[in-house]
Image (cartoon, rainbow, N blue to C red; front, side, top):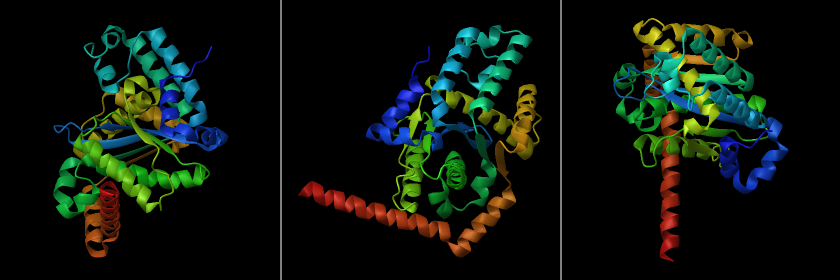
Length: 308
């Protein structure tokens, strides 16, 4: 018997009273599960990876993932710990033999491909970003490398959504970041800016931060982010693939005739061209300053209402 899982409850709370409206457009509604890799300061690359899943398939995903966990006896799938067979994070990872390890990895990829309609990943070399992008541009592009990657993801998915889900906004679910953390503050700002630039359509209001261990879509995205991170290390610093990374990369690339997965590891020269173009044209900066002015006016109006 199928049950409504944690993910479904979270999306219900995200949409609130608008859920009846959501149900009417369920076939056109998608949820983007967004995971990060490389946010640790010692890591050389930062990545934002998203898996797009039709809302109508979320309950089925929750149920199938639940059966997978029950059969193989693990609580939460983190790809880095899985690949390293780290028993401290998940005891089962260290207990499985080679066949079991291979089988679970195969099943996780199979579920991810079954329910996801597309995955998108943006990577940036932290050293390049720090050296090439001026501080005045980082003020809106992102003080944190992950924020820059998220901004690219949001922009790309905006165009994808217009082609595939024009009748309904996209929902965004980010891997958990603690309230008040500067990284979360910056993600909130990115979504506010996107909503402002959309003309207040409501397209970017439906987003949340969630515990990935409670949300199968985020665990699938974690696997994809890890593979993309290993690929970016190969591109940027010529670090060879781990065996699991190569297996995953080749499998996912073949799926959908190579069109299911979009990845971009931006090169130093690409960042430099963008920074130079922005210095000359100032298009993005002008939009950011317009948002800042809008926010100041909003805060001023709110302060006046409180005084009254």
